[in-house]
Length: 152
Image (cartoon, rainbow, N blue to C red):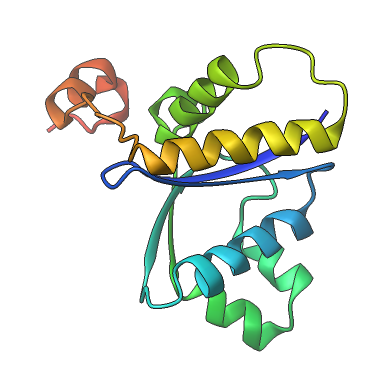
């Protein structure tokens, strides 16, 4: 078993994947710090769309880092959560499905071998600028998710 952290820029085809042996608040907090400080150091604000997992909160940053550091990181995030039963709306979930089908669709004997497979997959996806063509428009959302929209 492993936890996969994946970030994807659907319009540019840029991917980053890391594998962890466990899922904890500290793992997510360090992932966010790496994203903000290493992969996107010049970004003023990052829109982060993700699922409602209990570790995916800015509170995790405050549990791991000093308050000033946690605040610095949290202020650069604009977090949007997918609906509770709508993880299929999350582009990262689509990309994880691609990863699973192209790389993880078999039993992998060790954690290190799995990390190597995922690294090769990430490099290939980035070299090909593998973009996600999102076809779920606002009009389609209003039809499929009409129960979530207010009645005017």
